[in-house]
Every structure is written in C-alpha cells, then in structure tokens.
Length: 264
Image 1 (cartoon, rainbow, N blue to C red):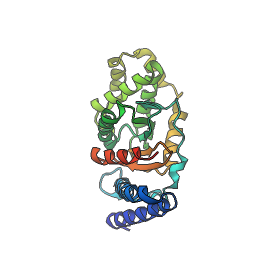
Image 2 (cartoon, rainbow, N blue to C red; image 1 turned 180 degrees about the vertical axis):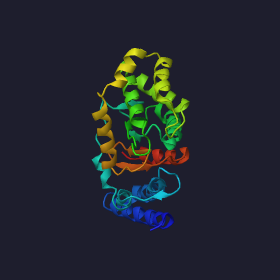
Image 3 (tube, rainbow, N blue to C red; image 1 turned 45 degrees about the horizontal axis):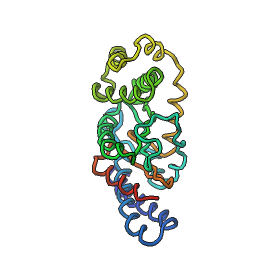
C-alpha cells in the first residue's frame, strides 16, 4: 500500500472506528454536536503521524504499529496516569490535560513546542489546560535525543519544575534539530543561562540515574500507539482521551481543546 492509499484508508477507517466507539458512549444533543467534529479532527491529526519521513529523508515509512493505531484507538487507555512526579506546566488540576511525548531532536517537536506555548498562553493562565511533558527519544534516527532528555531531567533535579520548563524552552529556542547541536557545549551552556550549578549539572548528565525513567516514558508512548513525534494525548475532565499526532497547527489544537473542555 503506498502512502497516499494508506492515507485515504487511514482517514476512513479511524473515522468509522471512532464513530462506532462514540455510538456506544454518547446519545442525544452532545453526540450530534461533538462526536462528528472530534472524529474529523482525530482523523486529521492521526493521519499527520501515520506517515513520516525515514532517516534518509527520501522515503515514507508505514509501520505495522501505525496501521494498528488506525484500526484501534483503545491503546490510549495504556497511558500512565498523570502524577505529581510528571513535568506539568499550568494547573495540575486543569480540566483538560495535554500529555506530550517528545523527542528533543525532532524538528516537528520544536515546531509543536511553540504551538503548545501559545495554547498555554490562552488556556493555561486561567487554569483550563495543563501541559504534561514526557520523553520519547527516537534513538534510531536521533542519537542525541536521549542525552538531551537526561539533561532536562538534570535541570529538574537541580532547579525543580520551573527549571525544567526554562531548560526545555531555551533548548528548543536555541538549537536546530536532527543531531546538529554540539551537545557537549550547548547543554551546559543552557544550564548556566538559567542559573544552574554547572558542575553538578555535568555530574548528573554523566550519570545513568534517569535512564530508566526515560525508557519508561518511551515504552509508555509506544504502548499508547505513538510511533512518531510529537505524540500527544488530550485528556478531558471525565477521563476521555483523544490522540493528537504530529505538529498540528495552533488552530487545530485549539479546536480540539475547545471540544475537550465541553466534556464534563
């Protein structure tokens, strides 16, 4: 199946599967007003993540796992619950949470990071949306991403949640993607810029203390259906989960957030 054929199959199949699921969960006015637009958005966002460029950049890879996502969105229920130990920006008790699994060398994650900053500017200040950051380094194509994930954890260790977010914001602002960053120089530089102890930061970076944590995030991302980055899951107040795959534009994310806020 070529990429275009798969894309068409993907939209039709995920739409029908989602509608079948919603038919068993919703009735009446809410179903008519909410189900169809949500299904359309999910089909659109999932298709963005269904095809992505291979490491060589000259082809498109369709994996069996991606087809599985098209056929079954129940993997979202495998998402580890949001806890106090997560990296949370905004109100931890916000009615809508967006859990993002990130590869720090991914150019689409870099783009989506600024999109999520806009989301938080609009919905985070009044406590409607919380942004939860988890790791998803794609080692096979981004060999530096895991080290950069460790660096962000070291920032958190030395400066807490605020330092974690300052570090990631500055990282995406300062660096290019696709392994073009001189991490031996740039990672400590960012630590200095945000006021961390550079000696302690370098010692933390050289340790293996966060390897399991990062691997656990990665494993959970794949268990929920993530196969490319950024991979996000939108959680509503009533616990319903919607997939948000790829670097979707702000307006698409905003529409999904507005729909999620209607769930009680």
